[in-house]
Length: 307
View 1 (cartoon, rainbow, N blue to C red):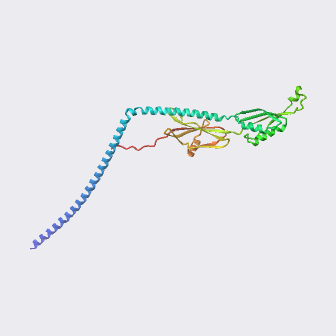
View 2: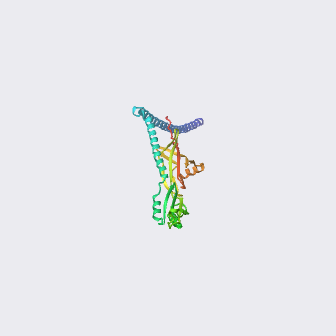
View 3: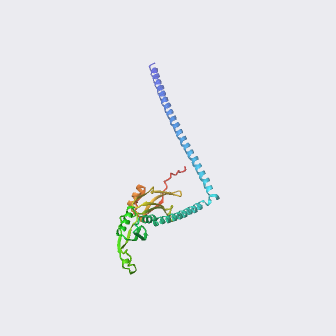
């Protein structure tokens, strides 16, 4: 009996072992099922993304093929040549416009004689004096005349100086002329003392400040437009802003160099111009500013790689 009871005890242990083993196996099976399920989902998502990219790339390729067919049609076959022809026509018109505005600038730099000065002298000249010569060369004015009083010439100078006709104070050059008294034919003339005077000075003038934009291309330098000019008072300041970039005919340009009165600015001056995005200065004479540009680099585009 004891032996039977012992055998029965071993049977219970076996039963408990198999039950524990079965429970562990069940848990492992559940874990494996979850892992397999997650793997299936991951594979499904990957396949879905792959299919989406494939369909999208197929659509893009189809659009490209359709576009190539359209561009290859007779309607679009000559567009490239037509575009080049139109660009050449634009360049020629720009050059023509530049030439016209350059001529306008040259004309503006040669101011005609200011009749207001003549009117001013005529209204203020003493009755005992007269002007027999009036010469204007550039900004230099020379007035010559005769007076019967030594101080009349000084009074004329004072009047001109008070009206800011000259850039600086001027004085007359007065000399006594005895030719009338020495002339036998006029010996009976009681007026034998008169003076020749000359007044010379630089007129207060305005200056022309001009600016033009050029593009440096493979075929040479072309004007991007006309000459922009403005009248600036002598010794007044001037400035042109937004010079670092320029757009013309749908093309963006970047400033590459600057010349002022046909002299290229130094690298240090050019760096200041770029930093301030402007060209400025003092008009102590006519100023010609030339801005030279190159085509701006296009930003790098992200390209999609077909799967």
